[in-house]
Length: 467
Image (cartoon, rainbow, N blue to C red; front, side):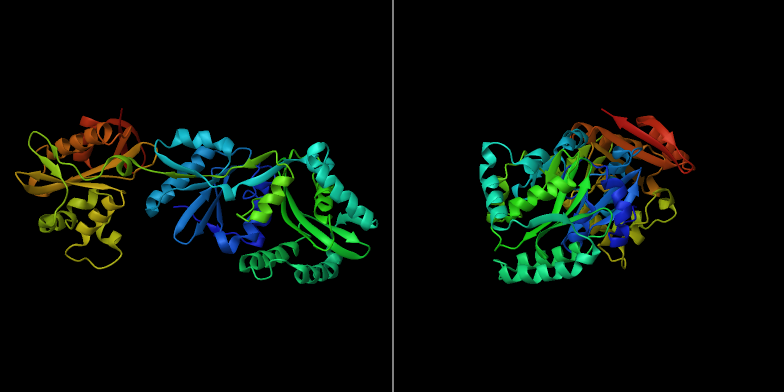
């Protein structure tokens, strides 16, 4: 499983080695957003296959950013690592805030997937030249505001902020809060406190901080971060009593920090009507969509209930409570199950009770993580076949075990083949895989009779069946 580390200030320099050249254009792919919203989104990170992989969580929901590769990074390998980690933990590998240009790659990767594109998530992306020059008829309003601002405060100027400006910054926050029009809005006040903490990091080399001054008085400030060819503006605050200061500051900060950038990202509007109106008035080149991909497996899409399969000698169907004694005996046969590859008792995470294993099978199908077939001979349960580890890319793993009293009669091969055929032709999988321990000669013989060997390692032989 992957090991993640919570994002801290100490990790910022490492994350920047990925974000500095990242051209996804979205604000989530930046150190500033990861630090500012870490209590809300709880970002944690790891490196996989030369890629930065960030996991977030909100409530009981876990999601992952699209991997950010280094020069030698392998995004597909990173995605596979995310998928395998989620399969082991029994959760769906949700890939969130996916840039539009990466959408086709994931649509091709996942045969079944729910995709959403929430309007309030979209970032406002502007051409740098537009905000730096405000040229053309559509920007006449901004030009007029800037002209009036400089006419009323002719000595106002913009410059980078440095450590010695901290007293002026502290005074700015006091002045800003005195004028703050959303003083009774809890969410806005929380965002303001986060902004203050972010501006305290103005001396970090990956941030560009600037301020508009009226003489010695700081009347507006901003905090930016350059990621690839996009200048991301994390913080923009100004005193409302200085009419026209916002467009004046936007123009100045872009001119100061946006050299050679193609886009300026002023982030999303969080569903705030005033922010949306303001950001649209600046004429965005586009709204940066953030797609959320929630892959689904074939059980979820095609299997409403466990079917009954008939072979020449066997019937395969759902476990019932009447099967519990025989099923428990099958699962608890440690000598027989040394080849099963999974510790059923340890997997319970608690004491073994009469219905424990039956309930695990029931819940696994209810959540569509696995489907357990009871293998019956003349109505008697003699084994089980389990289709599990759905990889969300058209594949799943199949395992089969037969009670020792019925071993050596070909029942395993018969049941295994039936479930594999059902999975490929009824559940719409494109690939069924299986493995066996190298010492398990009987399983090797069975799998070789109905699947194609595709490889081996020190422990297992691997097989697959494709359509």
